[in-house]
Figure 1 (cartoon, helix red, strand yellow):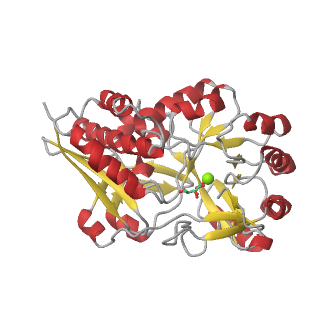
Figure 2: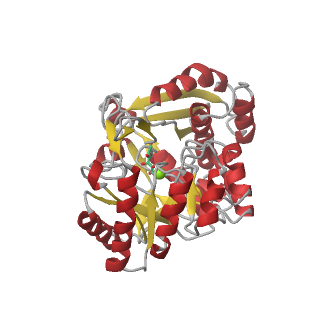
Figure 3: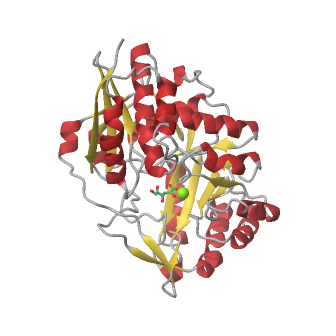
Length: 402
Ligand code: GCO
Ligand code: MG
C-alpha cells in the first residue's frame, strides 16, 4: 500500500503571499493544496505544520473521505477559517494524488463534464464612471460574458474593489491601511454608474456588483430595489452574513439576486441560507470551505433548492484553488459562474497551471490530477512579507465592515 511519506508547507510571496501544501507518497506521487488565508497566512501554516502534518505520515492517501472526517471530527474544535483552510489543503492535495494515480483529470473522478467550459466574470473598476465604463468595454473586448463593476465613491476616495495598478490587490500594506467610508455617498453614487453601464453598453452581458458587506439589511433592500432595472446577475454580500435572518428582510423587498459565502467555511454556515432560499448563489470555495470533498457537499445541498454556485476566485486564492475550482465547476450540475482575476506574472512563475481562458470561459488541459505544479526554487526568490487587507472607518472615525 502506498502511504503518505512527506508533507511540506511552503510560505512564499510571488506577487502576493500564498501558503501551499505538498504531499508526497511512498510511490513518489505528489499532490498540491492551497492553504492561503489572506492576512492570516502564518496561522494556517502553523496549524498544518504543528498539528496536521505529523498526523498524516504513514496514512493511506487514497482514503480522502476518511481523512476529511478524521481532520474535521478528530481535533474536537470544528469549523472556522483556519481549521477549514487547513483541511482544504490536505483534501485538495489528496484529490490531486488520486487523479495522478488514476491517470485522469480530477473532474473525471467527480463524474465528468456537465459543461464544455466554465463561465467567469472579470473585475472592471474605475476611479470614476467614465473610467469604469472604459474598463467594462475592455473586459467585453477580451471576451468576457460577465463583468463585475465597481467605481470609487467620490466623497470618500478609493473604495474596495477598485484597481490601482495593473492588478487588483487590496492586501497591499505591511499594516492594515485605514480607508474612509460613507454609506450615504455610496448609496447615492453606485446605482448611477450601474445604470450608466446599461444605458451606454446594453444588456447583452451579465453585470455583477459586490457590496462587500457594507450595508444594513434595510439599506441593502433599498439598494437592490433601486437597481432592479439594471438586471444585475447578482449583488454580492449586501450585508454581513452572521445574522442570516437579514437576508429574509432583503428578499421581501427586492428581486435582485443575492450571492453570499466567500467568508463562510462549512455546510453548517450556509445551511439556512440555502434551505430557506435566502440566496441565489453560494460563493463558498475549495480553499476556505474544506476542500473539494466538502464543497461538493455544499453544492449538492444547494442544488436541491435551485441555488447555483458562484465560487470566490480573487487573486488571494492561489492557482491551485483556481484549478480545483474549475474541476468542480465543470462537473457540478448547478454551476452558476466562477470569479476570475488573472494572477500576477510572478505568481505564474511559481505555479504552472493547465487552466486556460477562452471566450469568457475557463477550461483545463487533460493533465491527470489538478494540473498544477509548484516550483519551489522559483518560490524561494519571493520571500513572505506581512500584508494586510485594509480596515474601513466611517467619516466619524468608527470602524465599519471592510
Ligand atoms: C471578491 C472579494 C475579494 C476579497 C478578498 C479578501 O469578491 O473577490 O470580495 O476582493 O475582498 O478576496 O481576501
Ligand atoms: Mg466579494
